[in-house]
Image 1 (spheres, rainbow, N blue to C red):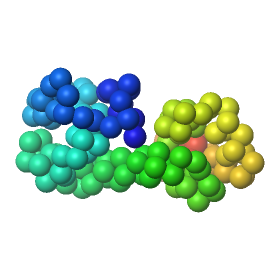
Image 2: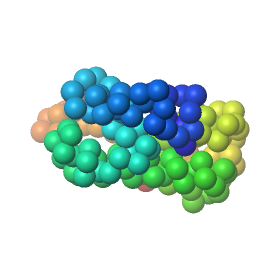
Image 3: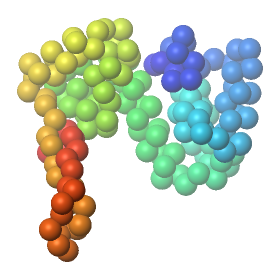
Length: 145
């Protein structure tokens, strides 16, 4: 698996202060803390230890762990079948992220996704919650149909 903060590594290793950097950034709230949380999980730091360091609700830690675990499954498998690709898209992985994880081109992932008929759906957000006519509704894309 590839680290967000340490892009040249496939796994986080206890080298040259890497774990110390992760621990430091978990203890101190900062704009990159969520990425360090993911790297902590990649490095094998338990969700319980992360909770004790951060006091971030275990529910959020568990959800990040599910994303990291799926990332690991994708890398371990080394390829995407329809089921795994659909799951990755449901989790919010972009074609670019999947390509990077698998060492492929973004265009290849797009072509695979298109050939498997895994396309986004567009849904409307009613900015007035149906209380009166919305003049500024907008759409968002999702793979959750």
